[in-house]
Amino acid sequence: MHVPQQQPSASLPARPDRRQYPRYTVQVQIEVRQEGNDIPMRLETTDLSRSGCYVQILIPLAVSIRIRATLWLDGYPAVIRGTVVTRHPQFGNGIMFQEFEADAEQRLGRYLDAITAE
Image (cartoon, rainbow, N blue to C red; front, side, top):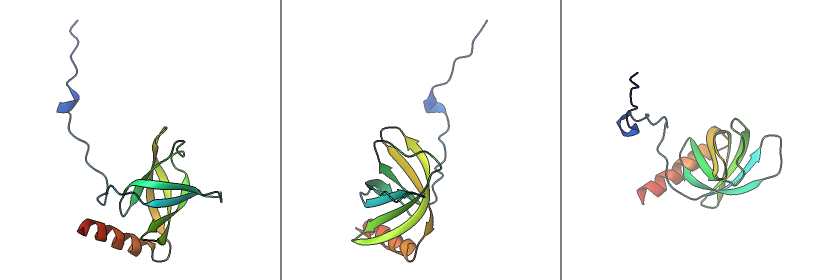
């Protein structure tokens, strides 16, 4: 019986990037609170975009947990509600931003525009 051999993964088509906005490797202080929990986790982003971020955390949160995050951008808070969308054990979480409070969306946009102009 002839068993077909698997093709090397290099020949497989690349998955398209589903991100709506480019992400930037930037460390920003972020305070994350799980919905219904007032205890903050003070973390730092490893990358950031207009639609989300990735944070390093030793014991990551479960996927689909709703959070309230405060990004500290140039010393000013930007409060955002979002959802944990990826989980990598002993490394971190990907967070998708969904609701921006007050001027948080504009503040984030200005911050990212400024770092890309440098």
